[in-house]
Image (cartoon, rainbow, N blue to C red; front, side, top):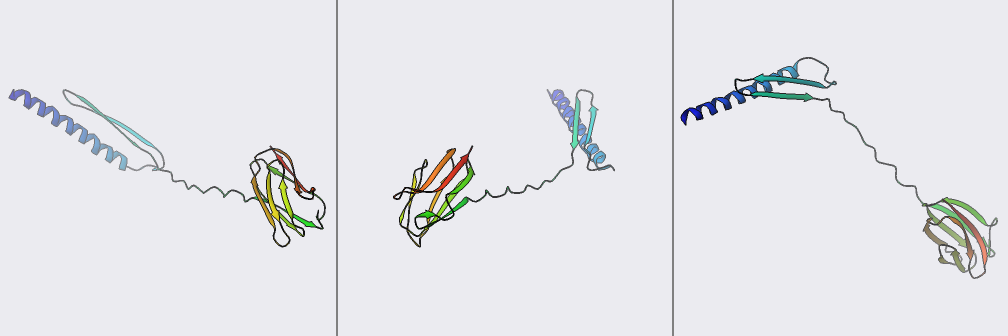
Length: 162
């Protein structure tokens, strides 16, 4: 039994010594001259009388990259409409926006009425001196009328493209 323990101890010492030799040898090889930017792949083998130990050491150059934050999403598309004498100044405002865009209609009027965006069914009151703001996300493609609801006067035509 004692002989068996001595043999196991000797094998263990031999294995540890081989691994340590490979480790130190790898450090020595790695510290030799050369281009640090290239990858180095060194493989060494050591053999004892009872077991083979193989160690592989790989060194690679590190690359640092800087990520930039994506630009902030664009602000909403603002469409201004001015109503004078219960009619859109300069005629019906015609605008195109892309599906998914955020849109704000800003209506200034010299008459009191309701501003109605058809298709999206959004309505806001407008009074002289206080602009109405209709905010929406253009999720429905098509052509939509904006009108002075009580007077049934079209003031804008908004096209949402797919």
